[in-house]
Length: 498
Image (cartoon, rainbow, N blue to C red; front, top):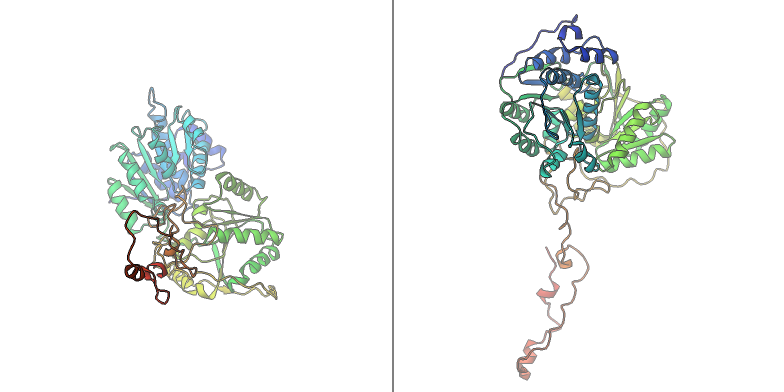
């Protein structure tokens, strides 16, 4: 793997990157004059036509780092008589929100070009997408699951893809999309340009890159798993039952107007949003069980300021691009330290400052230590003197034990494992933006049909009486021997199922 990197000058401007004039006009309309470090390094490598491996956190401008040169290359080499439903560029992303965001970037920078783009993801009606595929399409932004749905229905032709982009590849692997990615790669032409963007370079990412990229250029604008220096990090040591009260106090007391809050579970996100609304703080939850229109509406209200608090799970919030986001709150710490880096990366973008606040229960202290070890710094522990805990709190429901770091998030479910909480069903088929890691139970067969097979205190149902037969009657002695003895235990009817 090549480690070619371009020396970065602080004086470089977009005019130095030799982009087409329609693109320069769109960049000027957006108010940009100087590229970010990842853009300054990635754009020339992509324009040169080679493969690229780029390590960049979200919020570094990486989306424009590949959309701008792709738009330039496709415009410079037009295709005559292009068939419908046959894109020239395929951009794969892990979540619906990121797909919409990337396609919006394509529209913004390509508005003065004749190129056509389209976005497809699950959670919405597939028929409008099928209709759109009947027209010309140059750039397709898609999530893996819905893309394969269209391939299965023969509404999409991937034989003309010239450029492939895997955006946030680390998250796609973490969500279990590796099998889908391999299926998609098998459908693409062998001769193509490949661009892989990842926030971290795990061994899995290196293996994927080795098999996908050919003598790639290499760009890394931040050290591995580094945190943005402009983010002010702090932790409040607080019992779990007091977290929602402390969060409401922090929002009101500090007059926070835009706060992104992370929870571990969908059910927890719903409960917290309901609690904040009851406290007079407008809040909405987004996660994989929310419909796509509901998620889109909540995100739009959060961006325009009408919804000050957005409560999200890691998967739903991955790739959210919110300018000048001032506050991120970890309502619960993630099991995986790298996820903490992704979470707080929502703030402190484009040179702006931000604050990341973590609410840490005593059971979460080991997770906090793992995070501090990863980022190589201690997170200051602070107290809020103005916070007065309420009295007569309702009894707290028991929580399932947290998995220690090192176990996979989607482990195999066994008969002795606790049931998932309400709102976080594991029996639904995977959707785009949700984990496809094998091991989750399949729909149906979630309960044994025979009640004798349950670990239930209920007695087994009595066996039905035998039907009359044509056999001759038994003798008195034989009949007496065949009758059940009331003082004996019948293992056939009384045995409990294992």
